[in-house]
Length: 325
Image 1 (cartoon, rainbow, N blue to C red):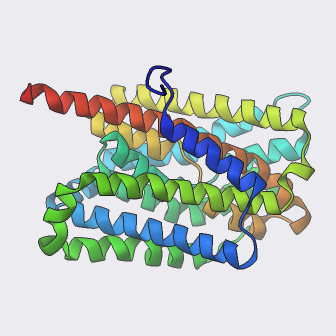
Image 2 (tube, one colour; image 1 turned 60 degrees about the vertical axis):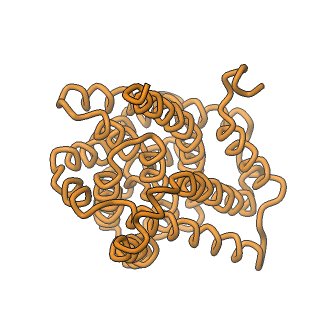
């Protein structure tokens, strides 16, 4: 029935996860357990990707300097320009406008960018390099951009995100790659297992992130009109960035796999990095309003990218079946 209606089952899972987090967010010890399970799922995801990728594929991904620079330019140049344009809209509520601008200054996500790239059949090795570089660079670049465009202060940063990225993502990836001679064949023969880990880890991240926002009083802080406006701005912003990214990728002659990396890594903004940075860069009383647009954009980007990734993945499966036919 879902196929006849052209409805993506994974999109329904994402929407259902948001609904579950709204009515039954994890609290107390259960929040710690849910967060731990989500972290474990992400670590397993990177472990399996490390085991799947050959040494040659990783080196080729690191050499794609033109792609990495294009992703960085999309994240830290194109997005802020669009954020400044949105803030200049007459009549836009000041804290909302500031929150939208702040989200455009943030780095890309890591786990979801790579997971969607893998589902879509893109260059996973290049995605690992681009997304990781963007997230690490953002720890330094975002405070500087925030000081220049919003606060006018010197800002600051914490080393905690660097440690978290290294422990949760880099180490499992390296461990999986080192074990590739023994488990690489099993991982390659059981691609469906990797698909389940990809999609399951994203669902866990959505549940824990949105549930935490609900517990902090998300639905009591904003009106329905403001929610609608945030959703419209997020959709338009995402659509503009994805359209420009697609055009730039084709114009620069990137392969289809690299254009997928640019689309998914360049269009994301990290909630995991944005929330702690907002706590450092803004007064405590302003943080809730500042990160509200980010929370909405984060959920919308996951849902839109889930649909696109499944579509691209299905197209790859059809293309792979043609030689056999």
